[in-house]
Amino acid sequence: MKSLKKLSLFSILAAVMIMMAACGGGTDTDKKDGTADGGNKELSGSLVISGSSAMQPLVAAAAEEFMAENPKVDIQVNAGGSGTGLSQVAEGSVQIGNSDVFAEEKEGIPADQLVDHKVAVVGITAAVNPKVGIKDISKEDLMKVFTGKVTNWKEVGGKDQKIVLVNRPDSSGTRAVFNKFGLDGATPAEGITEDSSNTVKKIINETDGAVGYLAFSYFTDDKVTPLSIDGVEPNDENVQSGKFPIWAYEHSYTKGEPDGLAKAFLDYLMSDDIQNTLLKEQGYLPVTKMKVERDAEGNQKNL
Image (cartoon, rainbow, N blue to C red; front, side, top):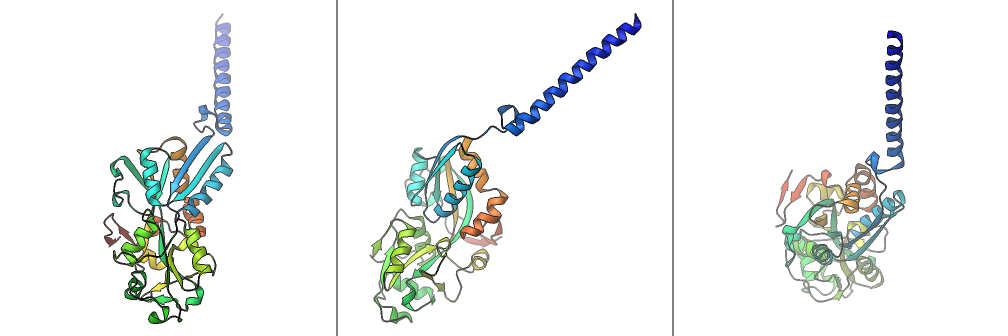
């Protein structure tokens, strides 16, 4: 009888162990298959992002890679300027609003309702048609050019060509950053106004004497000439050290804390893979590489 009881107990224990093993194996499979039980449910759905055109190349490239890894996801990345991105995310018509400026800097934006995600840093500088004949300009002369006090390039060391200003609209974060740190807050003179950085670059390239301003991420060829300022070259090292004055954080704002697909994409943007590879390829800098920082008022200090 004792032997039968021992055998019965052994059989029960064996059955329990087999069931536990089966459950454990199912959990591993679930994780690999991306089911809810594994805590790694396959992503699906759509995401609409709008705002900064200076930030658009980075976000569009990241979105393309993210969709390739998640084929059931659709991400639409629109430009329109930082003001548009901030307004649309605040009103809830998009899930993420990109901006070159802090939300606090834009009048009428309920900054207290938005959550800031600093994705990257971008440098911005004046860009001229290659035929203008200069590669460096003093900040004093830069201000004279953009405020209309100088109207011919020969007055600042260039060729005898009329200066043609190409500006961005008031909603542009690139314009706000350039005016604040490149022109010390001075108001630019009237000129051609274009909403897209791509269009600005095209006009500068095709128009003799043209000058505008672009993020470093648009200097991918020799169609326009980026200008040094007071002998300081517009490059990553000088932005990181704070020597080059015109730079900005690239913000992705959400209305409240992000969740679902928006959180997954922002986590992807902030991942080591994107921060260490795609940012550099697209002409941006990781925030973690900066040796200086700025607040919403524009105050800069060493880290």
